[in-house]
Structures are given as structure tokens and as C-alpha cells.
Image (tube, rainbow, N blue to C red; front, side, top):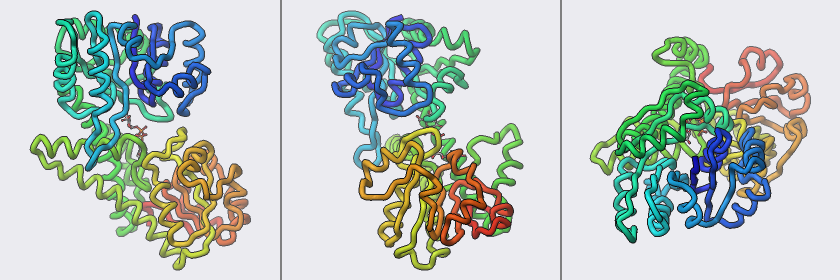
Length: 434
Ligand code: UGA
């Protein structure tokens, strides 16, 4: 099958690579010519495990190509996926101008039936807007369909997730669209046995925001619980384990810490609160989820403050800049909260992240970055852990203690066991463990 993907950001590129890997012929279109040239040279604009290899394999096999021309993309395939950005706009609602632009341009170049599929995370009822846009900008009476096919990939395991999906959701309004989307996903359904759920477009659009908001709520729930645990002398990890074994609750996304970050949860929950408001429902539950997430960072900052008394001139090693391990993505990462705050308070910061440092350094070029984790922690008054990288988990506590000036660890990811770290001679503060 020929498939066009518009937008070579995270979602578009991973989706395009996977579709091509499953045997389809894919053209990835992006209006950023520099990015297209880069991709044609085999350079990846994002880091994702396994992505570069699959892109290379598919390009070599002639099943994956890149173009800066939306006209070429529109002519190339009957099925066109929209995977352009929907960045937060004024007051947190999603900015839909890129999606709208794709709709307009596709309409202007269509020479026959096309199925336009929303893959980007969009507000409910975007399908209706897209249909209106296409109808408005089409020159002739050419038939088309709009569909929704939300994305559930996680950064760091995106290729694995794409090949073992929990479910595939499609929102469709015609049998013609359903047949085409079933064909797109036939290879992976056959291979993984996953379920294809067919529903109306609004339900599919909502499923995405409903899923991400629910996961964010689970994280905020356990983070709120961590505060109660600290006050009650309990251990949130043990409580989470006790809860998670109940199949109705499930063990995943019950890790207390510095709160969720990344390019999805903060933006999507915010957008969804605005969507609900606009529809006439005040989603106070989700507003509380956001408040708890923010408070979690403030609370950890207070622990640092309390421990150091005076932050001015203290050497602090920050371990982890990416919003989670396995990615170089620093968007909405907890590090973006802590580093400006600590810097403002006069701390001397030493920063380490195995792959996120480069992107972070684009924002804070004047900071000191270390490639070697032991060099980073040498002579510091405090180690702050913000990302649970394997390198941090594997730190030799005796060596760490010997390297630091004062053995204090503030662990925002509950990596270590409190008794073991304290027995090794550290002052240790984590999240939700008294
Ligand atoms: C998230 C969803 O998990 C995906 O299903 C979805 O497709 C994606 O957003 C998206 O909308 O594109 P992602 O942002 O890559 O994926 O990362 P997650 O693994 O969900 O982690 C998000 C944040 O929550 C991270 O900062 C992580 O550290 C934090 N988190 C996660 C916790 O603090 N505790 C947990 O128990 C789990």
C-alpha cells in the first residue's frame, strides 16, 4: 500500500518507519527542507532506540522516502496521515494551525479520492473541522474521507510499542475509510494479534486525551499518596506494590517521583482541560492532577533547601536532564524546573545526562556538563537525581561517598533503598518514604 505521512516529528517519523517496515511504501513529507535533506542523508532529528536502523533498512529497500513537497505527498497515496505538531497555543489549548494548513494544501492538490487520517493529538471534533476545510478548499467535487487514528507510543520504547500495540483505535465514518485503515494495520494485527477498535471519529479523538489524562492522573494519585506516606511514616513504593497487584488497578504508572514531564502529558492534560471547559464541563479532577504535579517539584525543592539551609555557592550535581530514561527529550522535563531555581539561588551546578545533555545545553549553554558521572559528582555538597538512568542506579555507593564533599542524596526517582543508602553513610531524601 502507498501511504503518505505529513510531518516528520516524533510521531510521523516513527509511524512512517514502522509502516515501511511492515511492507508498505511510505513517503514522509515535511515542509522543513533542512530536515528532509538530513533524513535523506540518513541522519535522525530525534533519538529513538532502533529508529535509525529501521529507517536505513526501509530506505535501502526502496520502501521509505522523504520529500518537502506536499503536492508530491498528496499525489503519492490514497491514504494521508497528518502527524504535524499541535503545540500549546494561547492559554494552553492546542494550536491547530499546522493541521489546518495540511488540510488546505491537500485539498488544493487532490486529483482523486483521499483518506485524511489525524494521527497528531488533536481536540475532539477536529475531524469535523478538517471536513469543513477540505470541502471549502477543494476545487472540484472530489470525494474524500476523514478519519482519526490516535497514537499511543511512548518515547524510548516507541518501536517496540508500535510492533506490540495494546490496541489500535480508528475513528471512521465510511466503509471505504475502514477498509483502507484495516489494510494499513493488517500486517501488525496478523503478527501481534492486537485488537483493532473501530468507532466514530469523536470517540477515537477523545480516547487519546482520555488515556493520557488517566495515566497522568494515576501518577498524580501516587504522588499525592507519597505525601501522605511521608507524614504517616509509610513507604510509597510498598503501598504502590500492594495496590498494583490488584488487577483492576495495575502496577504500571504508580511510580512516585518528581512528577510527569515530557512533550505529551503536561501539554495534553492542559489541552484536555481547555477542551472540556469549551464543551461546558469544568474538569476539576484534571486541574487537581496538574496542581499535584507542580507541587511535587516544589516539595522536592524544599527538601533541598531544608537540607542545605543556604543554597548559595553550594556545589550540586544534577543527575538526569531528560524527562525520562531512554530519550534525549528534555521538553517539560523536571530539570527545567530545578536548574533555573537552583541557579537563581546561587548554586554551582554540575550537570550530567548520557544523551539529554546536548539538547539541554542548547537552552543552557553556560552550564557545566560532564560526560563522566563520577567526575560530575566529585566534590559536591549534594547529588540531585532527576532521571532514573541505569548509570545512576548502578552507582557504587562507596565510591560515590568518597567522591562527594558531603554525602547527601536527594532522590527524585526513588532509585535507592533508604536503609542501604543510609547504612552506606549518606543523608538520603527520596519521595514518599519517611
Ligand atoms: C506518553 C504515554 O505513555 C503514551 O501512551 C502516549 O502515546 C504518549 O505520551 C503521547 O501522547 O505521545 P511519553 O510521554 O513518551 O508517553 O512517556 P511516559 O513513559 O508516559 O512518561 C511520561 C512522564 O511520566 C515521565 O516524565 C515519567 O517519568 C513520568 N512517570 C511515568 C512517572 O513519574 N511515574 C510513573 O509511574 C510513570
